[in-house]
Each structure stands twice: as C-alpha cells, then as structure tokens.
Length: 158
Image (cartoon, rainbow, N blue to C red; front, side, top):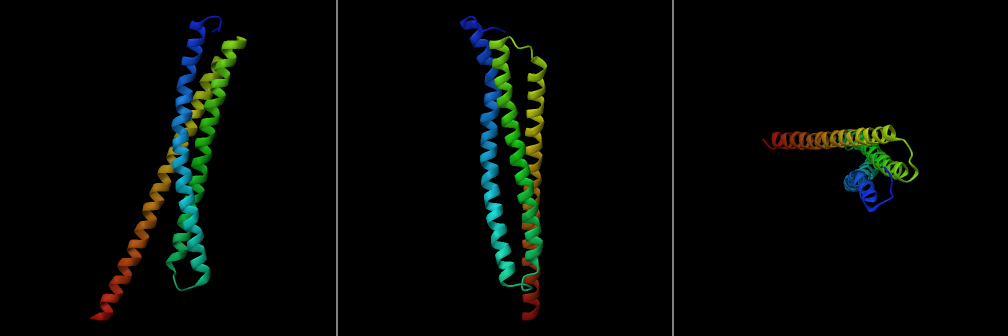
C-alpha cells in the first residue's frame, strides 16, 4: 500500500478509521469506568472513616468495606485493560501508516495488535461486569441488614 496518489491516501485513511472508532468508543467506556471508580473510592473512604470513628458499633461495615475494596481493584484493572486497548489500537494506526509510507511489511503485526486490543477490551468489559455483580451483592447485604434490623425492632414492639 503506497501513498502516491489520492486513492492510496484514501485507502490508508479508511484502514485507520476502524481503530480510531475503537479508540473513541473505548474512551467513553473509560470515562464511565473512571466515574464509577471515583464513586466507589469515595464511598470506601466514607465507610472506612465511619468504621474508625465508631469501632464495633456497625459490624456490617467490615463486609461493605471488603466489597468496596474488591470493586475498586476490579475497576482499576478494568480501566487499565481499556487503556491498554486504546494504546494498542493507537499503535496499530501508527503501524498502518508505517506500512503505507515506508513500505514496511508488518501486516501480521497489525493483525496481532488488533487481536490484542480486542482481548484487552473483552477483559475490561468482563471486569466491569464483575464490578456490577459485586455492587449488587453489596446492595443485597445492606437490604438484608435492614430487614434483620426491622425484624428485630418489630419483635421488640410485640
């Protein structure tokens, strides 16, 4: 693939559009994940502070802290995987241009970079899904604690 004509340039740009669209979509995923990560870490700080201020008064806080810590770690890995995906896709675009401009024979490298970027994206999505599972588990624990507390309060009243 040579850039000796407008047609050659058009082919190079077309080959670059898919990875650039991938980077754009992954950017939105990273934005969503970093927002979620910020909320999780803020809540983890609040729970830790609450547990330190009144040790022993809220035994359920320990379980919540463990879950939020797991979520923060999962989200950090998910963000890292999404960033790796974007990095690999960006390098792929650079290699496509190197192939076009320098007549660099690296077609297998482009395929490898594309496959690795998709694997990183899949990894990020699986980690993100795992975070949502843990978030629901944390909510279920809170609801169970609430129901137990309400059940004990109504038994005392009777």
